[in-house]
Amino acid sequence: MDVKKPVAGSSEDRENGASDAAADPPADSSPASTLETLTAERDLLLQEKSDLVDRLLRRQAEFDNFRRRAERERADVLEYANTETVRAILPVLDDFERALKTESADKEYARGMEMIYQRLSEALKKLGLEPISAKGQKFDPHLHHAVDMVETDQAEDHTVLEEFQQGYNFRGRLLRPAMVKVAVSKK
Image (cartoon, rainbow, N blue to C red; front, top):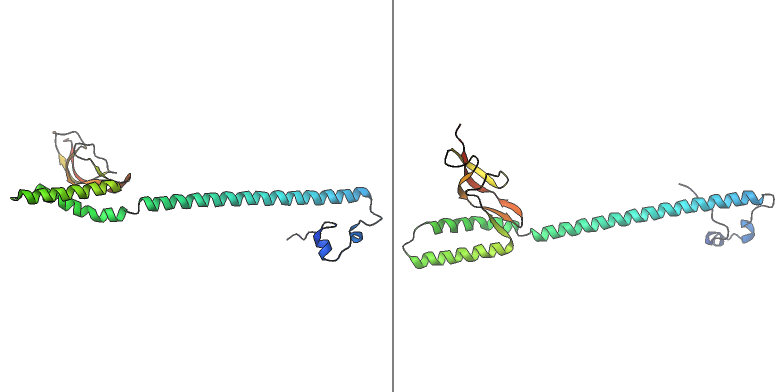
């Protein structure tokens, strides 16, 4: 650690009880050597100032980056906070879809089930749930989970033939891949 000499006439001199006369250079030193000493001291102080300003600017930049990162993480948490809740509700939505596919003798009951399904589906869409279309599409391993592969000439190679379970995106992110049957060309 560098120990700095107080500048002549500085507050440190006055606090330490040094007089202005003690700060004067000795009578035998030349004005040129005094000038060199003062110039060297000034250069040292300018360098220290430059280093401190540089450190301050770096710390401000680090703080700004930290603040932006924290805001971005907070926004992500708020945007995707409902992900687990929606994921937990998906089996209920699947059950409604299966129930609507079965025949019912009571038309009013079937109509009521359909209305409840529609309301639940619309509420989830407002939160950001988006169904992934799969049937007839090219197989995409990022969006589809192949549970069955069938050799056929009826469809193009790697085309989704059937969807066993609907896939969903939540606010642009994959929430659940669609479970599908995929066509494989005969060789």
